[in-house]
Image (cartoon, rainbow, N blue to C red):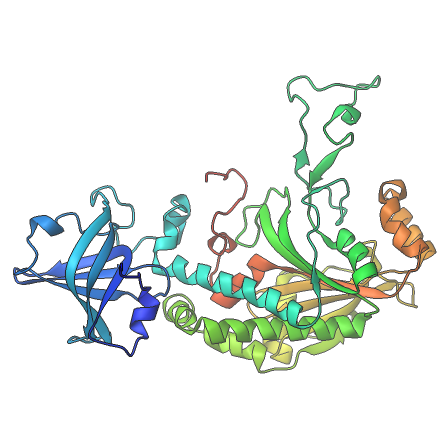
Length: 464
């Protein structure tokens, strides 16, 4: 019977010593002398490595010549209590097999101090580093936690389309999907591109949000959530923007603004606790290496009830603040990150939920307040990052929604299917959107959103 492979994580946590084990992984380092060689191996199951000790009375230098940084190896031996410091167990190797060589001169991860900027250029290899191994394990835990949170609360996971004929945000910054020849597309009599001859018979794009379709499902299933890729053709090269990113968007029939805020607060606190519970070593590493305040900031979210106030109240606080802002604040202006962080970090010293924004700076589907000036919107603000969730109670009144669409020049004929939910059995409902990468950015303490997604897409970059 062949020996089953154990992961590094399993071996490091094992209490069963003096037994034969098999580990496979990538060499992080190799050192030693003419009597013994120490081979440090990681297999991605944990941020930690395991040490294999190869006694040179049993191994020749020739047999170990290809065991260098980056090489993939299989090591068989006895799991024993470690004689050195830094690890509880190690492997006394009896057999070392090289599964894949790595040219020591060409291997890009040889340098100990490789910058994050350089690692973005070799994104296909950066998961092998401690930093990106940690980030990707945290990303996985958060994704799993999202599904668990909603499933445990009776939500249904709905797959909304990636290819869409509508613009949920009304921003127009969308990637076009077409099979028409780019050099000579068919044209109408007035010279416009004739999309009736395109694959879908109309102009289509990659989605910026699954919200509108999610609303349709919520009006039948009650409580739903979407979790999928979204795309925005915004020519932005900031540390906070990606062209391809993932969104989580719950929609709940019969919820109003208050229940929407409750759901958002419960959701975010649950996810941060989930990461702290399931990724303690990875988060400790990221705290120690990149952001000494990370763990304290995560505790700031889990330990405090979120402060709730209206946009109008927030503007008054900001106008009377002794701090000088780069962007002036007045009622009707969209708040900037500096304003949001002031409210969270300096004024309230806790996460903040702002509500009831001016209708002019919010989307057409948000429910109008009785004053006719504001809408039942909500933004959740976090330390260090500003807005992390945006949502609202949706406008369920057919005539009011139609009026808002007209005011904001949203073509009603293209969204007749959306309006039908207000014509046939309308009901109050609410939801929000959480940018997954923004959440991962907050939980890991990384400073650039390009470093929390395996293969980032941004202007002039689609390398892998």
